Length: 120
Image (cartoon, rainbow, N blue to C red; front, side, top):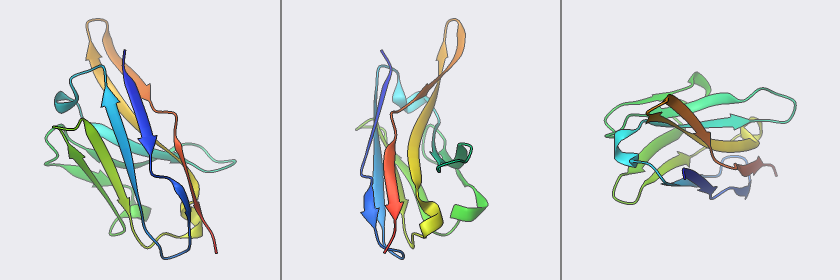
């Protein structure tokens, strides 16, 4: 079955960096676009960044442009989120998402999330 496993979260000081990973299995990773999302306490889940199946096209939410970089390694079935110049408002649970084409239609899968806390 489809599995998405995030890792790399933790506690970091403002201005610091973290690199999140999302290991995917159970579907043809190289054929699917992937995305990162986040959800802060008391807020709705929001899109952080997306990446095309080949990695050639990326998009970012305005608040992350210039600080975050999404990338992928199709040989390792893994998508990454490099986060630099972190701010306290980046504190959230970060999730990766896959939308998989199935015979029944499009199916959406989420990982379990990884906590990122930015605090001094």
